[in-house]
Image (cartoon, rainbow, N blue to C red; front, side):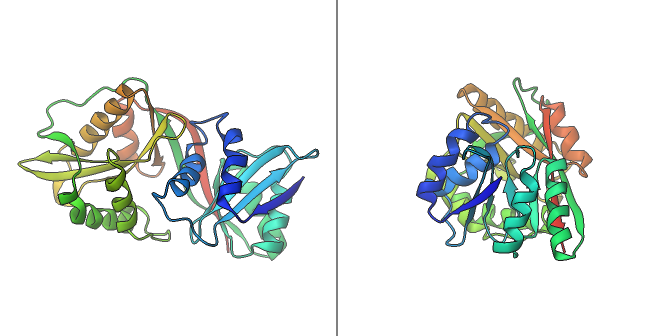
Length: 280
């Protein structure tokens, strides 16, 4: 096994995306990370770390992408890839200390890096990926869904910032305005639930990648919680995605029983778990 780094997104993405497209649902995070930068929804970072893990003969054994300052995102890795990737990171990218991927593989990678550096590996978070084939909408929820408009922009930026403070307190925070502006510009990727004539909850989704979208940024302000708005909005958006011939997916934090319960109640089913590990 050996690891190579690419410096040009325009070369890296076309080289690895066909490999990722063999499992478009399970690889959706990596596909949308790359596609969003290719499409200009997210500005490509000048120091975006793009790695290929190659088996003997040069065939892909896995990929890893790190958009600083966030965790490195790993595809499924072929057997024996973790030591080669750990060796490369220690030698060439020692600043990368957080990794997200399949739980066992990510743990082995973090342990390998820690062994080289004399640090220790710590599990930071555990997530579960879900998809849905048939939505079961909740009943008796006041209000209606609608696509977000330019007039909602400032409110959605504020809610996005609040979501990061609450749900991602231990993670680096991105500029909350940039993804809101990018999704508004593209259209169809931001939704709100409206009750009493005003927005009371929000949900976003990624642009389609190989027919798959991922719902995220699901947020309801504290004073509006307990009314079923988030579940109703996610159900409505998911149904619209399915009607468009696309597959909706989402991730939950396994330590949050509320979100796991809500999404499964509207028809989401678990697909795979992932984990984030850190080396100190």
